[in-house]
Length: 410
Image 1 (cartoon, one colour):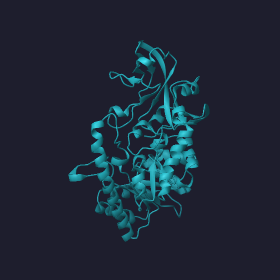
Image 2 (cartoon, helix red, strand yellow):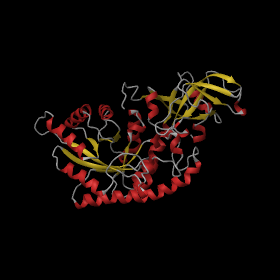
Image 3 (tube, helix red, strand yellow):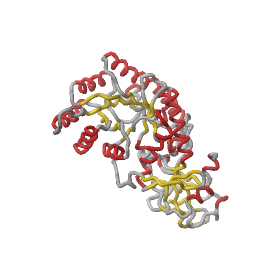
Image 4 (cartoon, one colour):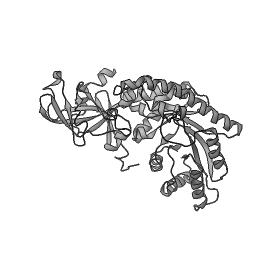
């Protein structure tokens, strides 16, 4: 089925007929095509692909990605220890937690998973992290032969020309000396074992350079991203050379995201790349010059009333993505084409008024569905218990989100 046929209002309207709205729809053919495309990029450069769970949050869809992506897929990049424990119960292994934690409840879960034989790795970026994690492992009651805690060092890859910080505020490990300080702290403690290094270039992977909501900034973004690609590669190369000189062997050297998978895959020292949002292709990821993915999901709201001939109002819709609260973080009306949110209300908690173009006036009645694309791929899962899985003209299944499985991870 061609994309134009896949994403037609008439088709989607029939698919959700009789379904309670709001509801989320995933087109499995589009999802599979995106997974194959991203896996193919990684495989072409001899890399593994580690999916980012935060951009999916539906175990059945993560499992499907592994089935479609085959041997190129390895492990999961999780965002919380509790989430990793849920994924372990769903049959996943090789779980890297992308964000540091020293919370005792998290460490208890990590301890239990590790002693069960699950391959779980915690992130760190400071000697203080090393001390807290190692001390917990040392003080925890254990039988003889307890497995050490696997850890991964988070390398900062922000672009910092002339003292300016362009990127996200993540790790303080910004120089080779910073890295070596943390490395020494890890190697000094028998309770922890260095499994890998991760470096996420957010200012490349997470920054659209063809954003229609701020078009005047696009040329500057493209320039900065081009300069940053070289800077990032140099930083990762320096760490790889340091590890080789110190004779430290890693299991994984992780980098990238959907928005930088091609450039990251070209670096010889990187062993695996990450992607997640591109599987489902939320609308923020359309705004990349290098984007090749297609929309694979959307949500439906019901029309509830019309306050005047050129407006309809839908129930719910305020599914705003995290980050700076710019216009691009809101859902966009998708089908039927031509609808636009009002400037005064936008997408609201309990209602979303839409401006109706002349060609559509009088065609939408109470109860009709309007389809929207969310800005980000993962956060929207926190608002739904399940996703409708569709192929062709049929609903072929229903997949529980973390929320639908009774979980909420912060």
